[in-house]
Image (cartoon, rainbow, N blue to C red; front, side):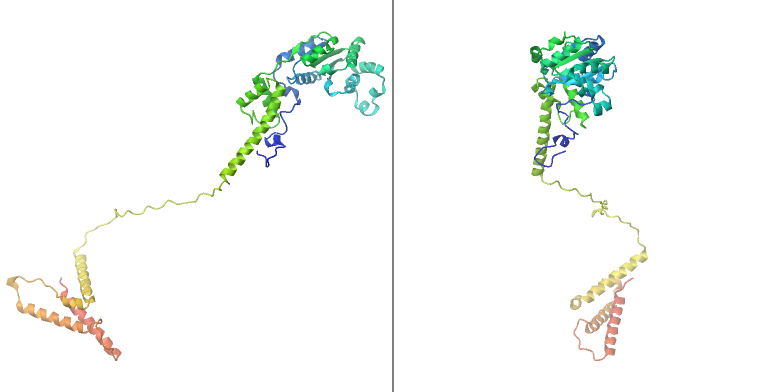
Amino acid sequence: MITKSDFVLEWDKALGFRGDPFADKIFAPINTFLVNRKDEREKLNWFFIKNYRYGAIIGEEGVGKTTLLLWLEDRLKKYNRIHAVYINAAIFKEQINIPQKMIIPLLSLKEKLISKPHKKLLSADLLEFLQKKLGQKAATLIIDNAHQLTDKNLELIKSFRKEGLKLQVIVASIPKEYEKSRLGELGQDELGITLRRLTFEEAKEMLVRRIEAFGGKGLHPFQEPDLKSLYDKADKNPGEFLRFCRDEAIKILIHKREMLEKQAYTAGPEPKQGKPLKTTPAKPKPSDDVMDLKIRKADKKEIREEQKEEKKKLIRIRFAFGHEEEKKKPVFKPAPAEEKDEHRAVHDEEHKQELINRMSSTSPRRKQPEPEKKNEDKQAISETDKLLRELAEEFEVD
C-alpha cells in the first residue's frame, strides 16, 4: 500500500499493520512475546519452589528485564496462595505508597468504589489490614527499575519483614545503578540473573512475533541481510534493534513510494488493454499455379457443334469490320487437279461476289437516307437478315 501524499503519518497502516509493532511496549499475552529466556525462567521457578526471599535481575537497558518481570507476574497470578504486585519505580516522581499498592488488588468491588477502607486507615494500621486481607497467602513484590526507590520505601520493605509479613522481593536494575543503590540491604541475591543480549536468531523471532501480532507476515518489509545490519548497529540490544527496525520500515515505505511515483512519471499512464479481437481463420485462397480441373473427353457431336460456333463467330467478326472485310477475299483450298471443275469455281466466285455486293449495299454502317415509311425499314432489315443467313449457309462445311 502506498501513501497518497508525500507526508507519512500513519506509516503503520500504510505498511499493512494494525498498529506499531516496534513500539517500546510490552504486549499481551506476555508469554507470546517472550523469546527464549529458558534458563532465566527456570531460575525464577526454583526461586519460588525453594521459597527464597530476595533476588535480583540485572541487565542493560532494553535487554528485556521488564518483559521477564511481567511474565513472572502473569505466572504467579495463576496461583491463589501467592499475592504478586508489580511496581515500576521509574514512573513515580513522588513517594510510592507501597502498602496501598499491595492492598487495592485484595479489596472487594464495594470496598474499591464505596467504603474505601485503605484511605481511612492510618499508616500504622495499614500493615495489620494488609495481613488480614492476605490471610494464608504469601506476598511478592516485583519492582522494576528498583534503583529509583527512595530510602523510605526501602526502610518500609525491611520493616514488613520484621513485622512477620511473608514477603518475597524480586528487583530489576541496570548494573551500574544497582551497584550504587542500597538494594543489597534487602537480603542476599538468591536469584542471580544477568540478562544477556539476544542472538540474531532470537531477535528475528521477536520481530516476527510482533509483526504477525499486528497483521503483518514474516519479516516483511525487511530483508534478512538488512536486519543483520540493523542488529549489529544496535549492538545486539533488543530495544535498540526495535527502534532501528521502526525507522527502517518508514524509510522503506517512503523509498518505495518515491520509486513508484518516479516510474509512473517516466512511464506515463499505463495504456488500457482492450479485449482481444475475435477473428476467424482466413480461408486459403486457391493458388494461381494450381487449378483443380475436371477433364472429360468430348464426343463427336460436341466437336462438330463447337466448330460450327467458331465459324459463325468468324463470319460475324468479318462483317463487323465493314469495309475492311471487303478488301479481304475469302481463300479457298484448291481441289486436286484431276477433280478440278473450272465452271464450278467460276460460278462460285461470281455468286459470292454478288452476295457481298448486295450485302454492302444494305449495310447498316453505310449512311442511308432516312426511310419515309416504317414498312420500307422493316423490309431492309429483313433483306439484310436474309443475306446473312444465305452467306452463313454457303460457308458452313460439315
